[in-house]
Length: 116
Image (cartoon, one colour):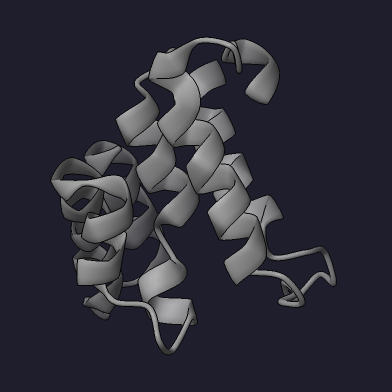
């Protein structure tokens, strides 16, 4: 995924900062499969790039950060906004609100993909 974004392009700095930050925040966390947790937000960002051809660093940063407010006890939306800006925080909040609904998994998946 990061191969699709030029790290020397200043417009992409937000994405790479979010990648580093999310990696730090999710360090030591594991998925049920045993894989490092950061593989999940990276996969979400990769889907946006490969399947939907999105390359907006704001959207991709939000994809990388979409679980930090829920999974990191001391992290708040305000913290995300302070560090990454209002647009990233709004996107993270939207995904977080979707996850709060108790819907069946298929419906939640459809809604999440339509939100992306």
